[in-house]
Image 1 (cartoon, helix red, strand yellow):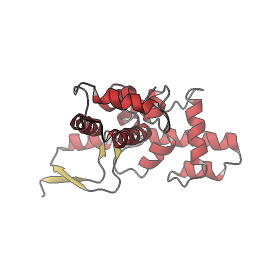
Image 2 (cartoon, rainbow, N blue to C red):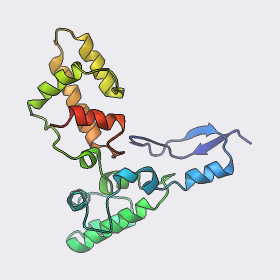
Image 3 (cartoon, helix red, strand yellow):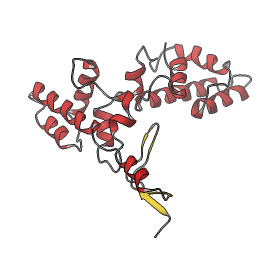
Image 4 (spheres, rainbow, N blue to C red):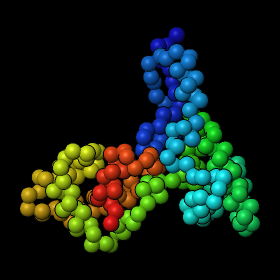
Length: 210
């Protein structure tokens, strides 16, 4: 018997990879069963939309408006799209589908993209406040603020950008680096929300928001 155990799908903190095939050291049945039972509502608890009360209504409306012209995978989401001319019924089906996805396993799921795009808060939704738009002059202030920041608390792409800024003593590439900051903020803002206390969320609150 192989000493490795295949898992069809493994998710990272910032999202998921569909259709991949990874090998991990052999685990006992209890550990495997525990992973198989991990639900969307467990792993992505910060990103869940409220399905029972009149909360998150603006996000639900935004998600539904996006959904109604798409081709989702979940049967009830498909039904919601098919009945988009019956708005109240379509929106009801949308919420019911998301609730079903929340209560399903994340392992080998065909519904990850449905969850991400139609049923969850992204970082812009979760963090809230006013994110800087593309043409704002606030980016000039933010890029200098990042350059003068302490390294502590920076990671990933923001840390790489900070290193570039530090090496550019004459600010000859400030415009290019400013665009990189904008791109990172746009990317991170669209990813699934994991709470305001993760490092990237703290960086976004510092450098992507007015």
